[in-house]
Length: 432
Length: 126
Image (cartoon, rainbow over all chains, first blue to last red; front, side):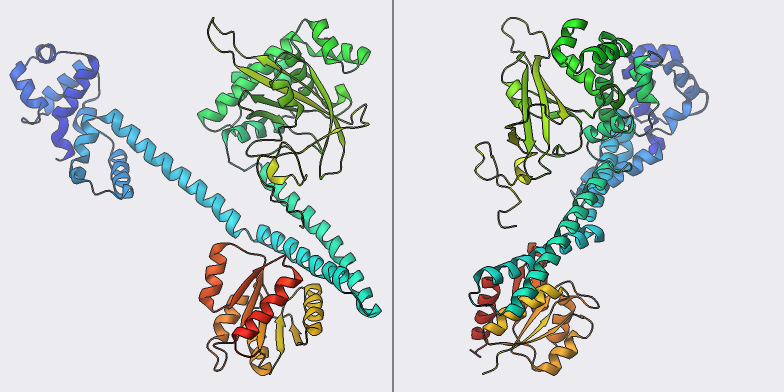
């Protein structure tokens, strides 16, 4: 059915949306209900003054009734039908569908557009992983050098009588290759890190929200002095695309503002200058909960504390909701993190302050002072289960690091052997 | 009974290690680094076995094998391909091109020696 023959269907649709009875519309338009019934079932053509009159009663432009859904919508619906791969018998009635159910048609078209966008993103990311020449070259370099080292080392270890000339040559090769391997693996990690931190990177909403916080140094003077609201900051940030990322950023900024109001910057600076970084003392001084103090400390500029700070927040499932990175402490971008983090120790002992010195295996073995606690996120009703979240402040350079607890980033990239907390094998094989 | 290998590998220290291993095992090794001239080198040398890297300057290992298989007398020459790319798709492409065996880096010396001996024996030359 052609679009211009569906004027009646659109009139009916609009009338029903307004909750108007047929007789009522007929009376307003000065026609008989039976004639309106014929029009609404597309059995009588309508135009001219009558169309203008009915449109006026229904509160729409006459063209909305005569032209119906936009051509672009019809075109998108046709594309959606073609891309579905399913033969659709009613394809020739797409105009009717769009005319009679414009809301549902728009939902379908929007879904189709979203799928197309996501497919392009998946294609781009997949292509990057598969064909990125820099990544391929870096991996090839690392693996080739590892192969050379492995072969050479095996010869040295397993060959009983090795002529001095060969032995010296292999020692020299081994030295050269180990240097190359350290350079190429560092280049590979740097490449991957840059890829992850790239300003133009579009990934999960959480990553985009974190990129926004990172670009602001996790500190928002406008929220400190009250010259802007979280809404202002989110609306002013063009990189926060999509409802999901805006909602995440909003929630984190609301939390930030609430913490900043409870512990004003100037007063907090004075307390820290006088008593150092003592979260429990600060909680007592400002009459705040410990989680708020830990979050607040991580939101201060580096010069206030005189050192870097990192922060992670997780929900009761252990999923990381917020990450502020700190140099030397690896945090997984995807998947679960190391269950040995004090964050999770705190999660199973709500309201209990947990403080541990930790060292991450496989890095430069720097120690970190981690302070964590879990708090009840909601006030449950009787019989309702509470929801908990945990927060961990990470300070580089543990004070009393005699025997720091070894932890990892995540099992996939942790080489630690015999770890009781391991849940899956590492991709870093023992012999690698 | 020939025991002559042509090794095309652009990583000099891998070349050196494999050369040492095979020479100890009684093979003569002819090593080259350039992919572009590899087919001519192999054709002229007439080896009993070829060890080839996948990623080579000038021409890829797959291209070399495809060309090699069109040369008279080279259709059944055993070719062991070494590569840093070990995905199933890479293996399938290598098989399709005519590679006899596929080995991913980093490999062990024992794996290389076993593969070379097996291929040699299977080719009926051992």
